[in-house]
Length: 215
Image 1 (spheres, rainbow, N blue to C red):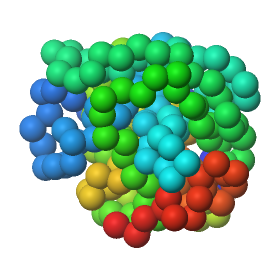
Image 2: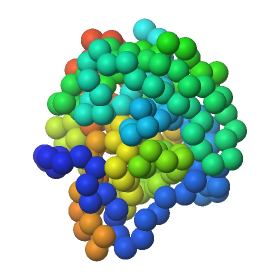
Image 3: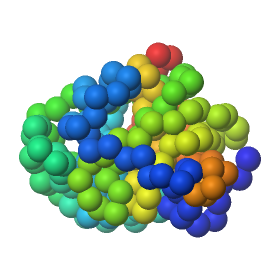
Image 4: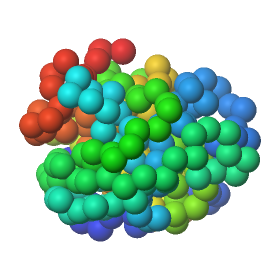
């Protein structure tokens, strides 16, 4: 399975855009409120997640969002009716690649939140907490489709430009991968894609096998 060449295009899955402001969400995806504080807006145009790692927490995002060595601005708690740590801090990109499409950012200051663990185990339902078009944090839900050669695909899970780099959450509240590509259509066809956490850990010098859980 090969992801689309263009990032963040045609990412609305079906005739309606189903994005819910995170603090207005009352759906069945129970880990959402526990994990949303770790989601961060990067340079006003991409999304990332503060993840748990043995070497220390870092922000995981898409590699096409940043360059190696870049200094980036990270804003936590950008949401309607904010309820968490409103930290705005700088960070440095310490790893970046395009295949897998990921980057790791070391923060100058860590927020007072719990980082989100990584997993290799998918669930039937997935969610993405994201900053589409650089706006306030929202959540979308959809269905896991498949994983092949490090690419995770999912259906009926809306994203937009700016959602790149958001974590793909399982029903246990762990990050299965990083959203990188949109190939859905408004007539209900196509799928959206990301790179798996397993592929990212395998490629990373910073992350370790022990950072990848089985839940």
